[in-house]
Image (cartoon, rainbow, N blue to C red; front, side, top):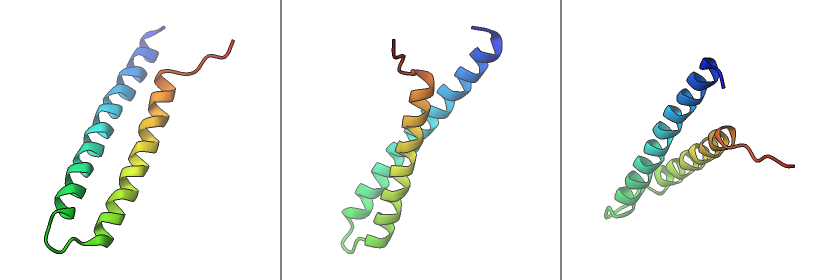
Length: 71
């Protein structure tokens, strides 16, 4: 593995950590909004869609970092 691959992998891992934190933050926000006396269901739905998009991006990066090798 050359230096450029190492830098690319480090960048992907940093992005992955950032996305995981954002995903966790959205979980907390959704839970907090859900517990309010009059939860904004439209906002919750938008946050859940954003959370799903983050999960898709997380999965994509994980696949790039750990590709399945079919023999």
